[in-house]
Length: 124
Image (cartoon, rainbow, N blue to C red; front, side, top):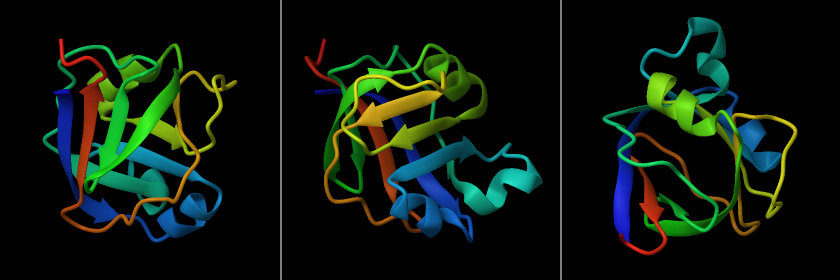
């Protein structure tokens, strides 16, 4: 599989665990607004090289999650703000255009220096 986005976690907001308990994770790059940092997994180094699509894979600390749905604004917000909401719900739709839905399985451990990747399904 071809990596199209790679970032390292540099900050984990105080309320991130509460969101993970609801099977959600909010990503932002280091430009995250102060009022959103408590809920955000803040990362650095992420540059989106190709569009994320259903069937691709999110990898967090080596654990892969198949992507089922990519909201209509998710690629744009990742490119501009390093931002997306990840829903670990296995669904193939969402009402929120910045959401990426991935398979519903054991949630990842998120800590400082965790690696977040998006990879193309076919490596092309």
